[in-house]
Length: 257
Image (tube, rainbow, N blue to C red; front, side):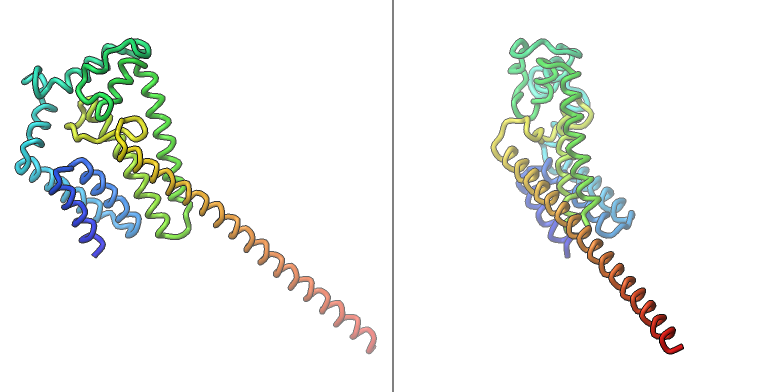
């Protein structure tokens, strides 16, 4: 039932031709399903179905075939379809390790540089070292999300936190991998860096939910420690009562003697 509902949502995204978002939610759901069931076969089944769906999308959607062709050889049409990816690679290589300096580059030469290709623009002006730092900050945030998921006691909150962490991490992975030509372009934005109201708002929702789960975790820990203290106090009180009863029993025996 749960898988059917998730598949329906993904199907809506596919019909809307938003295949990048469909891929993110599919992979995140596979991870959440594994956390819920702890059965590795669902992971293999999920990724196998995703691979089959990706091949089907290649034949069903023309823009997918175009993106795959660009990914394989952007120089086949350098002045039209491959222009964006070529300019992205030129920008990254021009910036080098330390960049050309803020406002000293030409990021506008990359089409849609402020959205899909914000990472390439930052590499050109601020340098690869700076962008590695951004990736490390993002990685730290992802690890914090997974840490919250690991320590949540209620299964529902554990799965929720893991799913949100997966969505955030996969989004960054797909965006950066597309910019540096590791995977075909998907149109996925980089959270908190790319321009776009919906992307920014959804990321704020993610951060707000995780902050709420973090606060809930602290309260759960405080409640657990309080219960442990109360239990220890009851055990100590029972022990003292037994000792008093034993002393009283011994005193009565000596009195009778």
